[in-house]
Length: 381
Image (cartoon, rainbow, N blue to C red):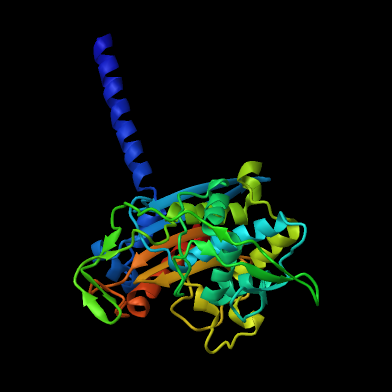
């Protein structure tokens, strides 16, 4: 009889364990959000195979001074390649500030120009332009200051990995491994020239999806073969989210994983990440509030409410849209993190400028942000 009782107890335990595991597995709010009947989400989910969606959503809970992050993933896979586009400007900005903090002779308000260029700027201006309007030239100037090897190393040593930034953006010398020197105004009448930096030549990446589509255009000719991304930048969801956490909540990480930014730099960076184009003089008709903010407001040109703060960096190129954001509602006292990427290239041809950014991609990301935001409003803490 005792054996029967033990067997009965064991069977009941197994049943309860399996039920418990099943409940835990489905306890992912992303599954509910992505099951939405809203056509902006349903259109993507009904043809999921062609969109290469990856999402990480982080819930933030507090207990006194303690922070707890709960990550929820959908198809996140560092071995499944997507082109990160302008999201790589975020690590460039952080690395540049950290390098400046290590130099006694420079700060972010020194004026400079890249040797051979005529545009003068400051590091502060470049970083503001990166976040406000995703300026490619501003990013490339920071790359010249850093070099690729130093940029990547600064990320990796803080736990922001995997990452491999190997080219500039939208410029003829994109792949040049030798960075141009900077001519820096040390005062009104004296300039100094930075050392030229040479990085190692990048090795081809080998990931799932590293070759995409069925064809691509190059120099006005169509090549009927997959487009090869193996020498492009690599900055997956895991790394993007890791950098975001370390910048928004540095105190949640051990000292060796915190970036070496002083208090003024940290405040400047956070202000830059949430800034709207109109705040630094851009025409609000052309550069509307959501110009660089896809989640929640990307499909609208209306003003973003004052109580919604979005600290983020977007990217869009080669049919791929990505946003990595910390979203804070100061009125309702909620905050969360969200990183998502989607491919919208229905004809499978790259470089033909026929991408469904406005029809499919941005509406999906905007509605995804709204659905997560609504979940946060209703979530018990």
